[in-house]
Length: 212
Image 1 (cartoon, helix red, strand yellow):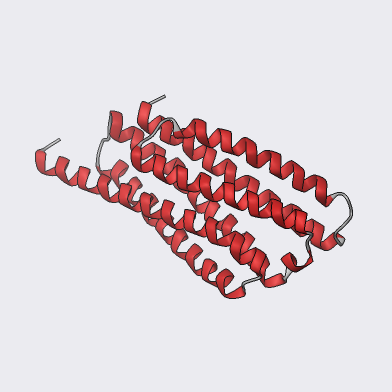
Image 2: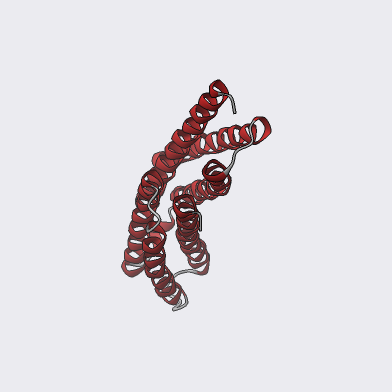
């Protein structure tokens, strides 16, 4: 590859990397804010997250377009190929996670949190806290190319699964009206999926770092 083309190629790889970091930051922020918006029935915060999700969606499309351009114009090999392939798998997980955060926040407009028990509220707060920590860990792991983040995210996901089971057990006791219980079961599923997406990304980070 001629020197000028090589420099341009690596400059564009750097641009892709920066955009992925930006996408991580937006998703991690949305996950953190979603629980607060839901539990406070904060409609303004929910509407703000809807706008943030539109930014996430556009950034996701921009990154995919840039990556596809590299495959069309260059012949990436070895580490560069591994990076580009990993980005193509990471950014859909990020985009879907942004959607999940928006779905949680959107329930703020329905006043659901005003009709749940203190126990269920506490479980939602804890699930939101763990998901937020997982997404911040994933973001840091990507920036640092930390292969070990995959193991740490798996451990936290086990905690999240236990909380999901506890919340499900609470919902079947019949303390909530059926429509509220159904909404809470869906919200619990959103939190669980957020953890799953973070775990998937952790494995992609391991692949970038180690090629395994």
